[in-house]
Image (cartoon, rainbow, N blue to C red; front, side):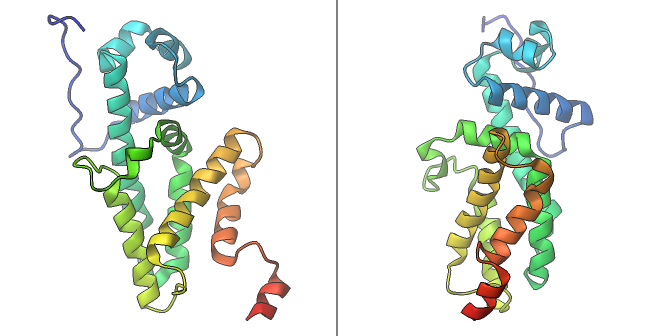
Length: 205
């Protein structure tokens, strides 16, 4: 960007995005997921924006990616807050957690597209996803300490399994292998009860 150009305003995460900003982020996220290597002009067209509007919003493609990643970070915080992760009410909290994730399907799809091997290296100075993982770890650990969540699998592994299920179902939706209307139920049943049928489950206990 030329030195004389005005940089896009910094994001202020002390306040949530306006409905207009939220809508714009959703459109741009969906466009980026659809065509990760698209040019700014192509992304603008897919999002139903003019190139000038997109330029005012972010200036450059790198700035766009940074803004989308910051938005994703903020939305993950919001997902955790809205889920009200009370270990004493683990099943209802889990249902809320699943619903909150699926409310932001486009965000999850974007994070899958943007995944890099070093994204989850929490020893890095900019470990921006660590608070999200920490919140899930605390929830599962709290449930284990209260005796409402199984203890033969560590809280960290439960977090990883939950995240894998959530992102996996969104990926399956994208590829037409899962019906979005049934995703919440499928994840809940799989996470709480596994793949074994009811009679077999009872026999195993």
